Amino acid sequence: MNLHLAAARRSLLSALALAIFVLGAAPGLASAANRAPTISGKPATSAIVGKPYSFQPTAKDPDGNKLTFSISNKPSWASFSTSTGLLSGTPGYSHGDRQFSNIVITVSDGKSKVSLPAFTITVKPNQPPTIKGNPPTTATVGKTYSFRPTVSDPEGDKLTFTITNKPSWATFNAADGTLSGTPKANHVGTYNNIKIRVGDGRQYVLLPGFSITVKAAQSSPDTPSPTTPSKRAVTLSWKAPTKNEDGTPITGLKGYRVVYGQRASEMNTTLEVPSASMTSVRIESLTAGTWYFAVKAYNSAGIESELSEIVSRTLK
Image (tube, rainbow, N blue to C red; front, side):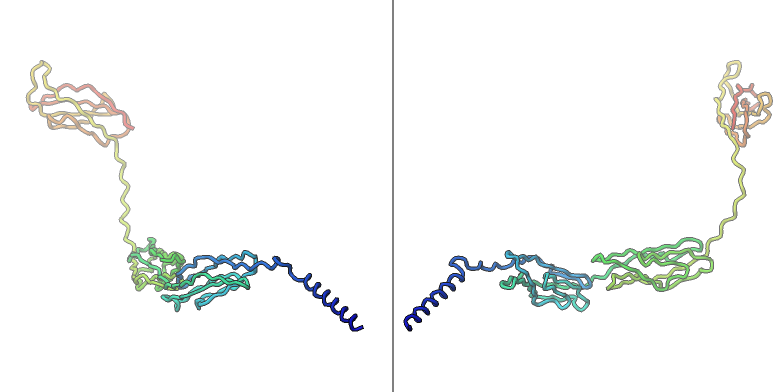
């Protein structure tokens, strides 16, 4: 019986050994080795006081494993996401002109870790805006006064304006810094120490203080009396005679007499031209209508020639 029992035990052990061998991994079918994740990105190495900073690396895992991030030497003003690797924050005034060095961002798939090269962030102080301009220092009652300063900001920040000692007759635009208004008679006087300030939300600068003197309006000149509209005028010209009727040369020519009127038969107005060399004359103050003109010459003895041909002109 003992031999039979021993043989039975050997048979059971063989079966157990065979069963263990079958359930184990077959040669050449061992689990594949883990592949490490990758991480890349170029973080900005400078930040500005009061302005948001942000950097997020790009990370992948060839096996599709879940990734987690960690950081060493994180700047005190920043926050870090272990699920996305996002480093972000806004440095304050106390962080200006400082360097935050040896920052290392690492990604892990739970088995392997890789890191970005260490980097440094230098925090620059905020640059204040600038303001300039030459405001007019006088205003006149009843006339519009206006001044707008010229401003700029190195970082392109949104700017706002304030004013102190604003004249009571003026308004002020906080969006663009325009000071404008129209003073009245009761505003005559000087308004001192007016100051316009511009800020980017962190720093402010002032335009030098200035004064505005409001002057009374100048008295208007007396209204001139209406003048009579200028009447019509006619310019006449002629050629000087050179011979007498008998063909002999003229001697002693002294001048001319221009006669005119509103009827050819009634040219009763005479204009004396007391110079033989003057062969043109302008007759003014004529009324509308048709006028008739003729001219005759006379010599030093007072002898007159016959009238020239009559000409006419209609004036409107």
